[in-house]
Image 1 (cartoon, rainbow, N blue to C red):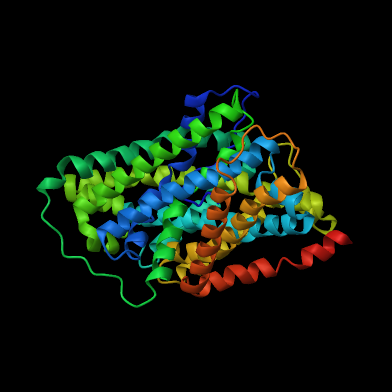
Image 2: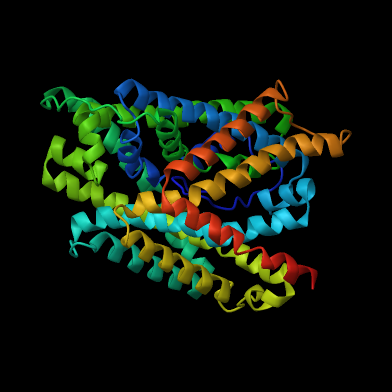
Length: 446
């Protein structure tokens, strides 16, 4: 899931063209995304103290590293453009991989697009208020316009993507400088309120769900393995350095948030980046940063829409009864019907979020259980493939196997359970949509 919080783009480079610094740059660029301006208030609502809050972000960086190690072994041993779909098919069979394709098309990817759309909507509402449901209206308009752009031409979509990509890093840099540079002049905030209730483990689990969505995109490391000059030697360096840089960036951003707002103030923020700049530098700075974040959010949405529709196209190619989705427009080099279907499903999710108290949180609840369920099976693919093909060439192996794999798999199960128990009706809705894909198995056999 590049929900995420991070951006996802296909890497079109000759085999063996990347060195360590190139790999680190790509990994950091994929992971660091718009989620850092949307998820921190939700994490704060599930943390009882600033120490717990920062601990969640640090733990998220460690989990990112362990998960990337697992994906790196699979990607180095079985490089394929299908990513997780290919790994699941080899390890668990066609049925599970087909259900993953269905889940990615109806829950994971569309939910990620809708989540980023709500982040965009909250900041666009700061610039152009549209009433009580303004954020949802802005979100829906963005989904429609970017879907139409992708239907018109893949080339134009990629040009827009390249033009806006740098804005995310620039916006994050502004937030760090503003928060840490002048925070001492800001009056102290109200005291912290601990998380209520006795379900602290589940509450912290939901906090970790939001943290790891912000770290989303680390699984793109699987696509780097085939591009490094010496994957066996370079991949550990890329992952260690990249994970350390991403973790450091996110810790600095969150320290700036805490020093400006305090934990309680952060919990109440609806557009934390704009609120930070308004507090530090006045209304005009807030408007400027909101505009930058809106453009960066559009960049994230565009990349997710561009890559997400391909799973419907793959379903159309694999399931004869759905072959209408497996058509490609030569005029714009786009899967028109797949893009249209993805847009319709995403608009339905935006409507679902608009009916909820918090649209972004509703989308996270919808996607999280399904996402972590398939992440668990992908982690398990490392163990299965080592047993099924013990003599296969593995340019990169998970160090200290099997402990990192088992830790990551257990973490995925724990996050699945936490999101299922504490995310509310949205989590049940996501699982029901997943189960609605079971008839695809019968269609495939026919």
